[in-house]
Image 1: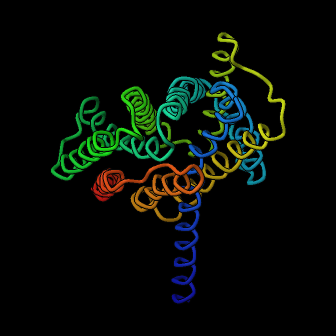
Image 2 (image 1 turned 135 degrees about the vertical axis):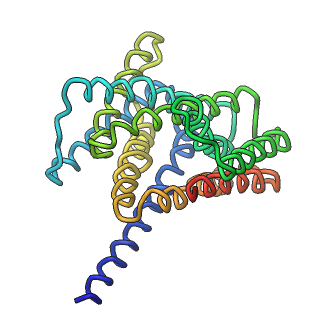
Length: 295
């Protein structure tokens, strides 16, 4: 009986590892599809409205299929909608702004400084004590950013770096504020409310700016479908499913596969430069993430 239990535990663990890796690969394609969206003339508001609309339908369908639909009310509902309309919307918008200035691989690397921002927020807002591993991780992150942006000006620009650092900060705020919610609310359920709220923000932005349009070509619709399904809905579901099986620390470590996936795809599909500085700097940032996850 003990052997059967051990086998089931091992099987669940392997499944969790695969799910988180699938999630990392999926999220790693977002910048790639973002570049394709630029090339067919899709505006940022248009891309993000359809991204969140498609992902919302799929995530809610998944929850209904699993029998896990939960209706949030009152304060919980307002917080969830606020997290989406302001936190996740800001992160997503700045991410796509960064793609207009930098390569997809560079955007993915710079975005992965967000765990360092989470640490800074924890220290400054809730008084969490700074440990040596935290300081070491921050040094790795800052050193990596300095290296990839300073030694690789062809792939980076000041405007792009600032936009993506803004996205990383917004994501860190989103994570920090959502922690209290996740004590009582399933992460997938919370995401189901965050997605439509974020999409609504870009409906407002796109309408006000006149940049919200209905795609007219099959190629544009295909790109939007890929962004909504393969770069958003599937990674979200896979991430939380894997998280339940293997825990937060290993999930965070495996998720560091995301930037290398983007860098590799960018190099193969768009001939984006991959210099020694990019590789070493990116590795420093990811080492910092691993150090934080083991803390």
